[in-house]
Image 1 (cartoon, each protein chain N blue to C red):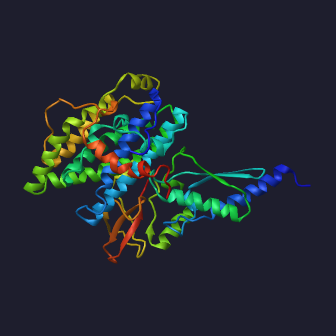
Image 2: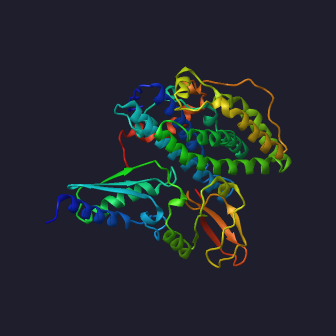
Image 3: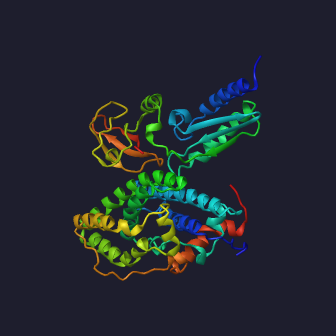
Length: 167
Length: 258
């Protein structure tokens, strides 16, 4: 016999999987689970509530992500799902999964360096080119096409590329 | 104007959050005025990105203020339905963009403070303010680095860029004192460990400024006469013009959503 608790737990896993498959609208190779933006899913009876955390304070993708989570859950049969934003603990690039980092690189975006320490923010950074792998790269602009990225250039293969900033 | 101003119950905590939210929103709006006008594409993107960070910080602080107030105000009402005299931002952030040097000097003065301020606020006893600080301090660090590099480039650049950068420093200096002022309502929050005493940051702020400014072959003014008023709603003429643009849609079409 399936108890209510077991059913909720199964539903939670299902809701988690649905929410986890939503992709970042600006970097569509990454799911919000890869990004570390998905924090929690709570199912109580018919109600489902998803907690997400913003990457950058002003990231305009967050509203879009919240909407897409709601739509995905509705489609999967969850009624009136809610998305809530949590601020603590604050998101850093360390929340990004290893799989996410590999997907980014394959997509042509250099993944953030492992540590979010201020040394990584201000020290000399070596960012490997996601195209050819060379370390001979240079920063072109601290601020790139979205708030999370900087613009770099590879001096070996001459390709410009985005770098997902350490945060 | 078609819509009445909201009333805000300014408890010390609400007022504290509003002041910081207003700083971030007004400076973010000023930077957004450069969108499409900056001297090069990279700078256009940089200034717009910094604006986005600041407006994001403002949203979180407004939401916090609305919750602390506990009435039916929200982030949008706080941003769009208060008039000049109800705004609590620093006079520094509402100063017009002027030329590129003036925009960057204003940003430099503010970011050098914000970087220290948010780092210290990560220790706030208020969990939400500490969480907002944890995001903002990283963003501010990038903003400070960006502004510092420009101060050096402009100051140590041509005769023209040097003169403009020095002129901007001299012009904006009198607006920096307000960042370190504390009134009664903030004193209690500082004692409770919710807020930090900005006076304790001034030494390091000045050291950051001195390092960058001297590398830029520029000088900081000696004057210690400081203009004040923004924190209590006494603003320069510039804020009203800014708000009339920022608020025009909500004032004209109340409750409009995209």
